[in-house]
Length: 281
Image (cartoon, rainbow, N blue to C red; front, top):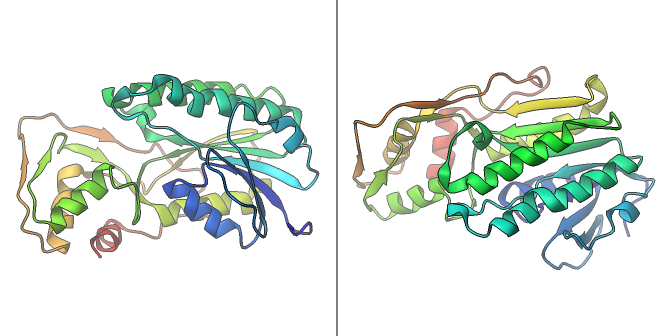
């Protein structure tokens, strides 16, 4: 049974790369209601519910102990596959959750947004448009409750999905395989997953310090590096013999944060060198 003396939070997307680490970090101090597409058995301090249009979110959010929601669930729909599933996961179900939140007594809604909304990536058009649509919805905020929209920049860390870019590069470097970069001069803000988890915890701890009802926050390192430089440093730290090929005629693009309003009580611990070293081990 959950400990009723502790604060309770609802979380979606708990089985993803970031979600697993946030749940592991929060379950020590909070009771959790986790919405998932997968089936799990309830355990101490954690209760599982369906992440679907069939779930009665209004009923769940009547709990007097429940304080707020952290929305992490997402579907990337890479190469624009399964458009219907992408919109279901990124807009339709979150919209139903948000509508229930607005009718409830819950204090806050934390949405996980992405830097891809400022980056044109044709392979993720459905993902980007669905995330933008949900962003516009929650920013209307009819009941004037506290909304936190956290735009995460390029999330990195161990145990990420092996099909993503950085894990794929690391796998090739370990095998000394050829690496071909399509966008070597894209300058990106890399942020370590452990720093992101800390940011979520700091926001929860300091909820009352936020005076605005809508808080659009960039979670970033504040520094940008090219894809080429990132991969070259990984290669160096891993002592890999992989060959890196790319076109020198491609244009440079920069994707950086405009600022971070939570820097009063949070700053990243992982420098560029520390990120490279961590990923290289």
